[in-house]
Each structure stands twice: as C-alpha cells, then as structure tokens.
Length: 167
Image 1 (cartoon, rainbow, N blue to C red):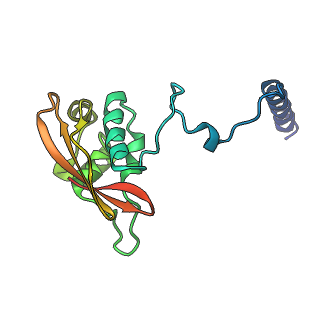
Image 2: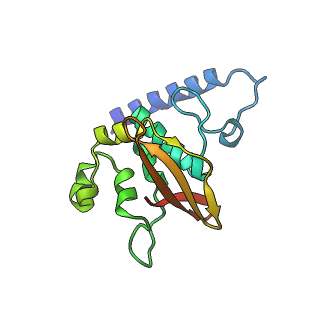
Image 3: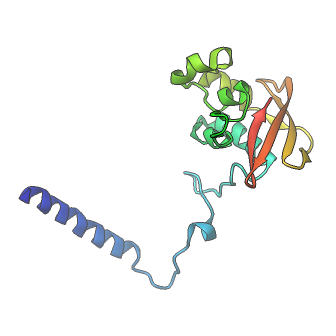
C-alpha cells in the first residue's frame, strides 16, 4: 500500500509539473471545444457527421478513404425503446458496421467486409442536392470502384440531427 501511494504521489507530482509547463503562457486564452471546433488527428476541423444530409454522406466516404470506420456508428439513429430496434434497414446497419465479425450472423447477406466497404464507398460522390421534406431527406450518390453504381440514401432527422434510414 505504501509503495502504491508513493507511485501515485510521483505520478500526481509529474502531472502537476507538466500541466504548469504547458500552460505557462498567460497571454493566450484557453479555448473551449466550441471555440476551436472538433479536429481530426491531422488537426483539420471536422464537421459534425449528423449536421446535414451531405455531412452524413461525406462521413461515409471519408471513413472508406481513411479506413477509420468507428465514426459510422454515429450515423445510425438512436435506439427506439418502444420497438426495441434501431430504426433503419439492414443495409444501413451493415454500412455502419463494415467488417464487424460479431454482427456477421445478425447482418446475414447484408454483412460487408471492410475491404468491400472501402472499395465501394471510397470513391463515392453526392449527385445534385439533397431533397429535404420535413424530417426526411433523400441524397442521390454514386459509388463503386468506378462510381458506376447510382443509389439514393434515405435519411431521417431526429432531435435536429440527420441519421441513415434506408437505401
């Protein structure tokens, strides 16, 4: 116990020293997350993935390009406690879980490997402007390795945010 407390004290002391060194300049005000915006690992400002139908689609394309697919789950609508389901079709559920082996059985024929997801969506592109009707939107897009597939993504707005519905 005494050894653990000594280690804890050393860690606490080091963190205080590091914090005071990082914040030694009083001329620059601290920025909040709202002021600075969200940033990716490259330091570029990142748009809220659910802020608009275009942002939802661009999030899909960027995830396919980078291989960082964790953000895709934020595109699924919130769990509906009344129905006990996530209110979207199997294609959208699979799209947001590429390569997720633990869901392979649940997704069945909709299951998509990470390699297939990257191939199909990394060259994706929105065609025209979204059609928004109240809390529903349709976005036409091209996808496939040669942008040779044309599809419409249907979305729904819930609590001011856009989520995938079907395609």
